[in-house]
Length: 598
Image 1 (cartoon, one colour):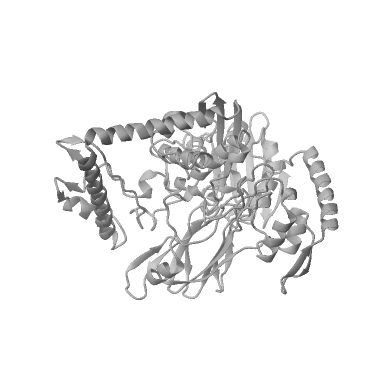
Image 2 (cartoon, rainbow, N blue to C red):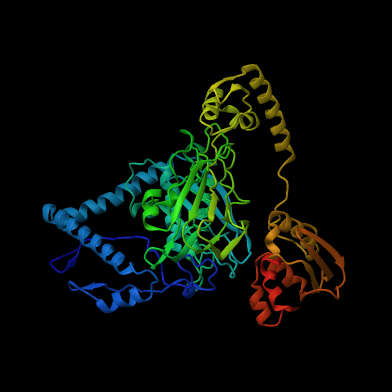
């Protein structure tokens, strides 16, 4: 807003558009090779100049968008900006420019001072937290986000320097997105009355080096990064600060990957539609020290308002059959995470679906002894002849009218030791069907007897005391044994890939070979090298020495490059282009290498 040719305030409007003009309808180009594949790149440009709409610019934007309503969406956004500017003008007219500026400066300074005072009450120390994106769409595994939080007096430094730096990732998050995710977590750990403004940034030091996957080079694809590794930024921060102030820690993260995007032509209008599945559901609402997880989603969903079934059914060709909370899914704890939800959508028109699935391995972590949440599962073409569960990605999967899409959304995690949850609260959970009678005994050590159908249940106090004592002993023994290393994220030498990494990859994701059954061969030179053949049959692998004449794929490289590619420290495509890596294969098989080896 301009007063006497002087800019005073800016009305900022942010919204989601149904399409971005990229290579994939809906804007989530999760397999893009670079940022240009993700959509039309528009620099800062005026849509309205000196009170007149730039019809050439609006025509450019409409032409590069699939949805016929895009022009109307832009008009609505401009209208909202005009309302904001008018109301800001009314404030300036009522109080004057200097008063408004002083109020803005005071609000920013107030936030900075209050946050500094809050940080000063935390125990000094260095606290570290790590989170992982379990896989990207190219098959890269265990994309690491690491936060080192240093509290020194009233100074909080958040250092993400140890985060993943692989250059071949298909999921990266912009620095601006990383800043937002830091604050979405940090603000939940503060007095909610604290004004949310620039003072938050002034009160902390945030270190996110260029080249990490959460501050990538400008050419890298970033559309999926609003979800992942975006929320992992929040998760790593929560894991770190939960060691300092566990009573303030509630993970603001989720494992949804991207929404299940559905597109086609509406049978009534013939117009192209995109259904981004922004439907009301329950996912990853975690418990805190104040109580059980509640609400639909964590604050990481931020400015996204989820649509009701009635609204979306009136606009899009589908029927929403179910929205049911899943019994025994909420992370157990002194305070329980909100259960996840089973979502069933039946399409009423032939369409295509694409999605990227996470949360099959990595789950929302518990706090202060609480258990993690449940996993995500996505099922396509249900009710048809080709129904299946998506384990990794689904690109352009055709659906016939009448087939269903089913998603089991992950739950929130628990806070505190589940064995300290009052038995009467567990009984209420069983009556509400959040927890089963079996789950009450297994997860909480609470023995419940009676008839659930008749709503006549009671707690067996003596049996509960006994089983809780037994579970405490068992868990102490497990803690003493230490964690089991069944998720090797790095290898030290080539042999370790065959001994540890290969069996783990097949166990965690049997689809990692893309349905390939046959033999791979590896010709690795240098110290620690050798020749191996691997025969894949379903989810089983047989390793033999030497180069098999039946191999459909033979990789040749040095041991140093093999280890570097597997650990994500060097780019295999660059090594191939400069001749450091060679392969002989059927080209239809070559694409399997990315997910299988790296």
